[in-house]
Image 1: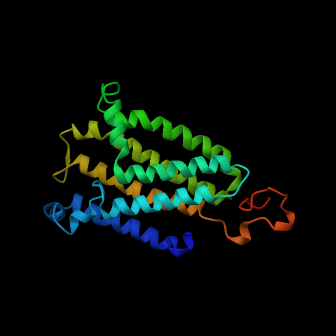
Image 2 (image 1 turned 90 degrees about the horizontal axis):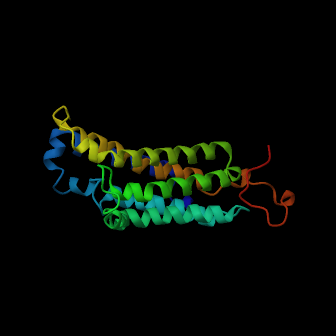
Length: 227
């Protein structure tokens, strides 16, 4: 499934999209043309643009890889896969904004978005519970990639939560509002994190899978070899 597109192509695409978004958001020449085609197609903060669709596609791939993973911890893998598929759908259609509108009457006392307060803890607890249970299915480098990807998503969520505070500050760097820098940082994380997560959960190569003759009935075919 993931062999169709090599990871280095996805890494290059993510970096290129982040650079183009930065040029449009953080340079004076780019800012003058960022609201017009073709640069407007690369606005990572807008919906249905090339960076957004890229993030959705890679996040959905991460979810599908998790859903297809064979392991005694299959229920946790499926929960994790369902989480990423939901995140892809949410990023495409803005479901979190609808949830934020519903939660706004109860969670609108501060500058942090209501949806962050409502969904952030659910995402964090679910992801942590899954990682704790599935960590034995991944070789050490893969586990480090998985944790790194989640750390990047957590930083992106913190940056999103702080937008209300940063947006209210009258601070400019090189004449550009600070909020544009923090938004670019957040979007970079959201572009790169799914690729790192895909590198972690893509199917293991045959050499990394325990030999069939040594595998007990019902054991995971994706399990890491014993050390």
